Figure 1 (cartoon, rainbow, N blue to C red):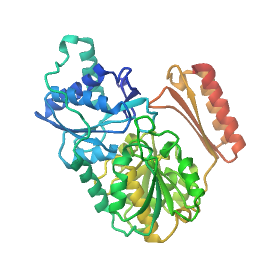
Figure 2: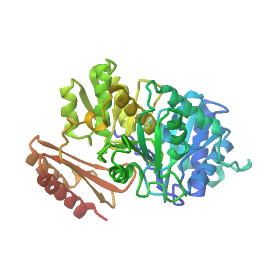
Figure 3: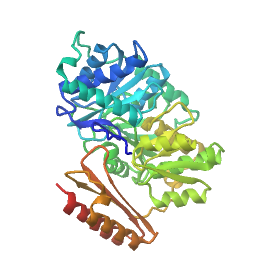
Figure 4: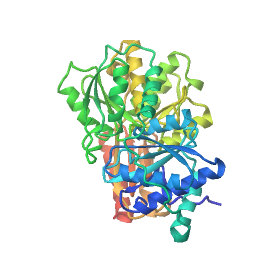
Length: 458
């Protein structure tokens, strides 16, 4: 028997276009109310912390969700603009029943989302999200059950600055290495990192210069940040000799990518290699095992194997990486996109700020450049093609698509990989192909993408 499918929650909470269902004035209020009811049932007078990114819509969505939570009996504290992992940390460390984040992460400014952390700092399990969904739909279908607004509106901004400071202090205190000699160029993506990165890096003694740190509500992720790492890399290359590395976050700073001193992009696979080998050398990598996803390059797997480290693969989404880490007791995991999860401390989700500090500590301790630390990583040519689809029909149920995928796998014969999946947050099919030659990679990816476009394309 298959489990019920969630209609609102994707791989990273509820996400959509701000102002359209499920992110309207009414539905965001009801989402807050449904979550509040869910919390109150198990913890009367539940306390909730809420935070948001810098999108134009984040304030009103946060305010409506906040009202829904308060109207259902919850006590809500706002941290204002704060990174997603900042909310997760506060939920866990301050004994909140839940943490709520208003953000669409790396999506355009017109999108937004609501993600929820349990009081332990972990994202809600699928079953819990499904229960909240049922309550939301029940409220939508029965207007008389809507919770009346009986409280004065409470603005989520500017929020309690002491909450943000507590998170920054925790990160700063985690650093055990002198970082004062490092010169770093930081791209804040005009997002949530602008509220914390300058204070944190100043506390760590870093020589930091900032890009895209002036959010205006519409410029989040706009040709900047981890979605466009080439912007940072180009700035480094144009100023060779001025910086030891570059750091670039996404809109809610739960992920991070890097640039080496020569202006070459360093992705999440390379970060996993750097950190895994460092942990292995210090004897702290539990089980000599890390967790990545189906999208991580074969080159990472080969480099780790040479260091005596096993790579396990999970479904795409840091939520699923974490599930596999908990199942196997791994303390390091992550995604090629820059979500890196550390389980050797208080972190419970991908944290771009924490990851950047860990990488810089390794550089400072070893005396090696970022380029030297990954010099032996041989990356298989890889391409990812996105195809907009009108429906997410299982590929196995579309003969033409399935035949094309199987033909590509036969062609590769073990010397490459094919991963075809749907985005968890958008109406997209993603085709990833790795091969020993770029020509074969592009041909096979094009064949599969063409089959999907013909059968399911918009």
